[in-house]
Length: 403
Image (tube, rainbow, N blue to C red):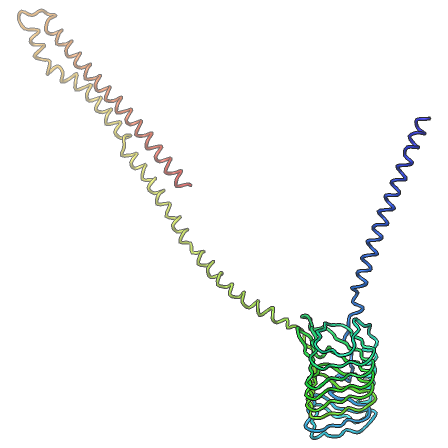
């Protein structure tokens, strides 16, 4: 019992350490999670600028609240209107590429849409605070807020960073004034259709200046002599004054998806490798391989040699042997006749010359038969060797042809 108690007591510190480790792990994980959420919150796109919807006002180059005045041959690419006022002067000599609306329901609706657009631009969360003169600055997409007026005495660059949908919103609490020959430059995909200037009072564009974007002014807009605008001049409550100006309506374009297929066109040249493949498919090599059977034919010629060879020679030797044995016994008495006669002659014993001749003939016959047998053995060995060599040669050729 005491041992068990000691053991149980020994587990309690370990359990405490385990709980503390778990708590530390959970706390660390929670800290990492909070840090990640904080980073994501800082990078949240909620602060990014969004395009301002213009409604029916998008079809206008110039829209005023009270009057529109023009001096010189100003050129407007799109509609011209005024509401609730009715006065439009200077057209001609000014020219409007679209319709001209003096008050009426169409201009009234356009003014209503301008009010909505103005509030949308003013209500977007600011990305960066700006003030004073924007000259020499390069800005990327975002919402730029000024608590007072803004000026531009030289060049301002708006950098789209390769994104044709990048949006620039300028919130100006009071006046916007650009100097003579000042300019707004768009680079890297930035487009005038996505640039908006929300002005809390009035805007003035200097002589021969180049301006980009849509002006949404609470009061009035003055465009001085020779100024060029890629955008719109939309005044809610006041007038718009023109003097030999050119207005071009901005049109948003996206990066052409056709540029990729243009690259895809060059891979059609890959058809050339197809021709090369068909050229490789020329079974000339296969024909050469089929020529290998010629070797096989050569091998089959070997049996002819086998037929002509020693196999046939063997009977010849056999016949020679047979002929030698018979001929010797028949011819030998003829050649041995003198010896027999000599043995039977006078003064010679019965066992004399005849037996001697017979012995000599027998010895001669045996020696001839031994020579013939030796020749037969040699011929047999030669035949066996030839057959073995021929067999090996044929087998080797067959193996080489099969490989």
